[in-house]
Picture (tube, rainbow, N blue to C red):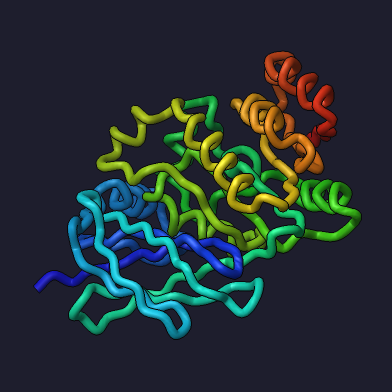
Length: 303
């Protein structure tokens, strides 16, 4: 008999509607991180790219006093829209099980109001040192280290201060993390955030990769995912204001300036971590100028 493992990702929503998703695995085997050897870290990371999913499997989902039914797609993914009334903003547990089985797996949903300010942040080289523009170094760090030994960006408190400055000295409670990382890294990112006291939030990651080389080949594509995820949040929370956080090593400023073409009035500011290479700032100047022209202030942080 197959022992399924359900990873129920953090969902999000408003008081009348929420979205959840997750994967069902028939082979999992990931363990909690320890400060172990490089070889152990390699083995653990390799397992993340050999995960076996279970497709077309019926599921039962419980949220508060409501029950919903769905099934996984061919890749073991489930996505569910929850139409129900939540008591108010905050975090709520939900539980997923394979239909007919007793084992339940817990996830959480973050319910936001539709008006308070939220932070929408990149992860790699914005919060987590990843060396995304140096492929070999990026892969080495990814494989050789774990959530306890990977490093957050230095002086991260400067980022938190800048966020407060854009929000009348109030630290927001709503965080959304939009990354080109894949769902294979969800447990790692959750552990990393918790270890480094980075604010809890909802993740928007790329499709599950099947095999390590699938991850490597995916390498540098990828900005449609970030752009479309950000637009969907602006559309869903149609009165919410956002602070956008990124770095100048990739195309964060280009993406944010494109979003600002539609929603400049709801962007309180853009915060950019500067990587120590002058060409990155020159490359992004046209996008930064566009943001200022649209009335969106941009602040650079050297961290």
